[in-house]
Image 1 (cartoon, helix red, strand yellow):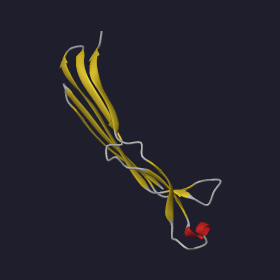
Image 2 (cartoon, rainbow, N blue to C red):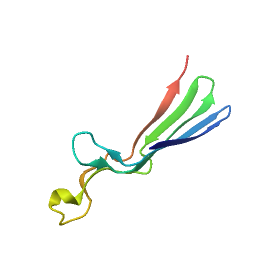
Image 3 (cartoon, rainbow, N blue to C red):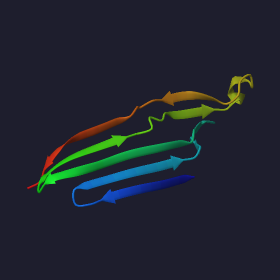
Length: 102
């Protein structure tokens, strides 16, 4: 299951966009494991100072969520429950700058 929700604001000088993507547990194709449910949020925007000159920014993984691969406890002889096998922490990242339009 997947869901998306976005919000936008736009006037003559300011533009803002907030994007949310939620993914439910998703099985991997070759192993008895799955990616854990995850919410990914990003934001971007720009501000126009004058015609042709603006500042912009973009931030991905705004909530700083990890990507987890979960495996069932049965692979560990049933001694432990479901647990993460791979935990990928890409972190929050972004960019900003100034743009000239001709």
